[in-house]
Length: 268
Length: 352
Image (cartoon, chains in turn brown, green):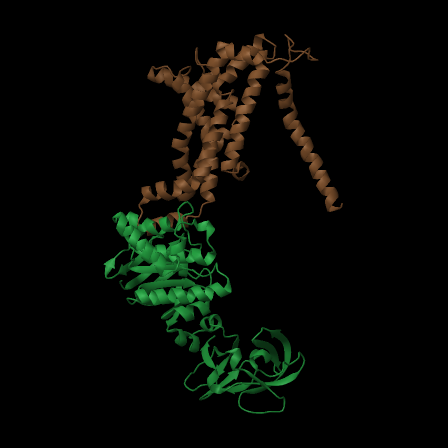
């Protein structure tokens, strides 16, 4: 085939894939403005009422706050653990390095429902052993979300460390800087874009999690995603679509911002 | 300023010897070039001196002080990296100030020293720029200023010119040498380029497979290579194997007997002959070390022309003549019969 023709084929395939990803989201956004009382086609009219209603509902408002809080703390946990871990993995030479890296990334590939169930059972065992409540408590949820975010942080920070020549750190050392000074004055500023991206991405990943959280939330500690699922069990109207649209907006913005800081494609 | 002594240093990686019992005494103020092909251990040796790689065995002394176990930040050495490694988030001035801040000098003192260091490399006007806004040559100068401003005992340079284009490389070569002599700083300069080593160094240390193959003043190494490897690395293209068959006589493996400098004896030797010393004459002319041959291949190189000729006995020789641009004779064409000859004293016998 001519190069031009090949380019056209690529363009067509890309368009199909993009449509496959975007159309359902577009449908949700569209539906969120339907005036129909019960979700049905075609639209009888258009309204903003569902957005107002969603905000007035305690379960969604509280869920949103819980999700944001949880995500922020998950970011803190995943950075506090993930940045030093990435440093050790990239710069260190020790036995079992590859195994540890695989282990740290594994929550990314284990199905969320499996991970959630595993955590839940581990928490129950610990509760029996230590005689304290863990599952259904906020600390339990935070541990789980830290775990959800950690592999993404490790992945992104590792990628920016790999892309950074060790000569910068060596230069700092030859000029008299100790290890800590080297980290804070040279390594950290250079990998900052990766860390910012990791923070934003961790936030998103924690915010959208459903599968792990479903095992671990307790009364009064429901995340937004779980509030949505519970609502869908008994209702079929556009409130859910309105909430979803707001989320698409927030997450879209966060992903765009993180991509500006560090090309996400480089890390995967 | 201090002398540097390497006492039988060894670097072993999983059983493989990267550096194999290297001993070297570098005098105060001396510039030593570590020269060799990639993988010869020259960079590993430099990085061991700098403290970035721990030595497996041996000791490193600077000014009589044993630095063997010390981390790089306790060694007071200036290190120039191949890619300069200027901190990308700091301005030129901040880069140069970094080492002085680590030494906790007062602010005014730092500003004064940074100014002097940048003046020395003629870049004081660029102090506020970021490294990425500078050209390669300017980055190299900043890196040099940054390494020298801390008044190190030793300056270590790892292939400092390899990322520059030819023109700039010559300029920087002279500049590095000038600054080094002006400060009288003991310097180790790693390079794979013999020309670079010969033109900057007081002494050239040629390395091969983790060992020192030969060392000496530049003209020493260039004029009297002690091995086939050294000869080849110093640009000798003609290495003719054979054996000594009498006083000043050498029988080439092809059967010809030629005259060589007196004194050498033994078999398993090679006659090392620089291409510039091989003359090409009219086919009829006879004389000492004169072999009938045919031009096989001609390479025009601007100022010189290289001719690959094959003697009737089957030997291949490279002869290099000035091109017409340098006032040399008219070029020969492939297929032309010639006589390849050289003076007996032009050859050096090296172990094959």
